[in-house]
Image (tube, rainbow, N blue to C red; front, side, top):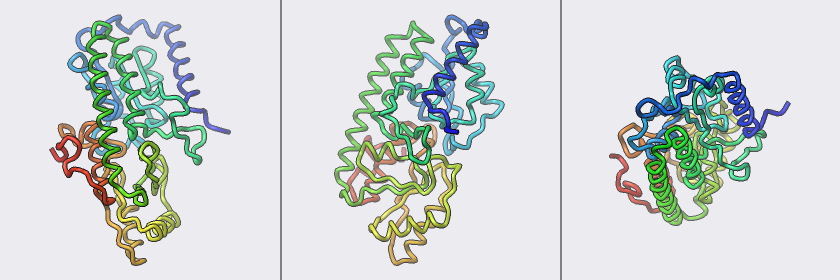
Length: 326
């Protein structure tokens, strides 16, 4: 039996919401929040955009913080309480937070609940061969695709708080310009990497949208979800690829154990090829709160700068804005 497509899942969730409202479950939703609305977001990437668009008009709460893997994360009682008391719940969608599905369905009866990827068409999404019927959820690795999230969040905030419409629109427009600036920095930096070295080997398949946008071949040791495991044959195959194509660097990720990547390094060395760990990339979570890397733009800035420098290209040591490490 084939799994339901993500778009069908969205329709099913919407139907459940409408059924709940028809039974009176939405009667508890206030016409306007008392005081600043509360926005609960599953991941840091979603929450950072929400903060940029909301400004001071809303309180934004993040459920999954630094170093947390959303593929494996199970909602705690505290998470459920926050979701059920929120005015707006924002999540990535595309099955990234699969263990939250039941909670989202329950929450949708009494508050706004939205997948921020809902505006992306099937043509904009990647559907890996090994997971037919499901899309790659790591859309944030492409800043231009991720810009559609700004629109969704803006519109949901306006629906929740119509009085803030002008402010939300201005904030969203300003942030979208910053995403365009980020895209331009990425392109300039990648242009300095020779085409034969544009191969990105990482712990799991989180960078395919990045690869499609910027012309990189992306190879993940594990699959799209960190629930999958790499076998000995997978490691041996990738070691052979590193040696054959003289790839100089591989990368670990902040939310994934580094043992598989280290196995590649050790295996290549055993065959006489020196490959280094080019750095740690942020894949499914951002950096430490309060740092540049703890923002979405800082996360991507760090990744691109690290990749480009490790593969022999030229990028400022402290990144696009000179803020890496601050």
